Image (tube, helix red, strand yellow):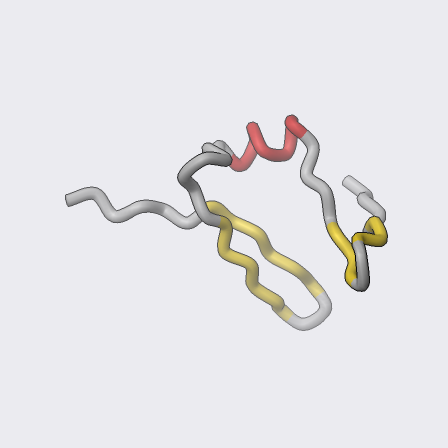
Length: 52
């Protein structure tokens, strides 16, 4: 999948489509995303909540 960055104020944004959010299984109200840089790659994943 290819995406373009969008100018937002003095920075740049990467917008996630509804399909992308569904594939990550993210609840936008409570879940967090972890972002990791590996060389020139960007890895985004859902932070798994610890179940007690």
